[in-house]
Amino acid sequence: MRTLMTWNPYRELTNWHRDIDDLFRRLLSEEAGSESPAGYQPVMEAFEKDGHYVVRADLPGVDPKEVEVSVLNDTLTIKGERKRSNDVNEKNYRYSETVYGSFERRFSLPAGVDTEKITAKFENGVIEVAVPLPQAATVKRIPIESDPAQRKQIKAA
Figure (cartoon, one colour):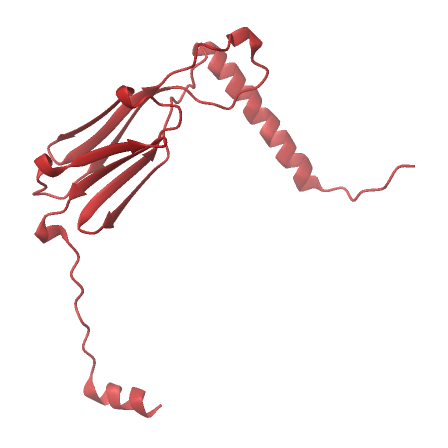
């Protein structure tokens, strides 16, 4: 016996959208020699921690020898390449969402950074670059003073 299900047009549109995206991805990747037309773009994050400007990039499957970190004129550049493994023949693939190719990402650094003190480490498929911030670039909190009459009203409430 069959069960009746409520028709959900959004599910239909989502499935159709995914199928169209997959079709274009396959067509474009075949034309580009099995490389992604947009190239590989690693997921990155940048933040300040303990007086350092830290940049992290997820590079799963990338050989650390294929990654280059450089600084030129207050611009940090991380570039490299994610190469396809030779252990699987292209004819044997049934499905793949993995993207391969060269990448290059750039970040502006604060003026006055001592480039000799920049460090980079690669661990578990993640590269982390730590740039010591100059004293002028660190955040200093400024206390906010308020009107004494307002302070009395706040305390009374």
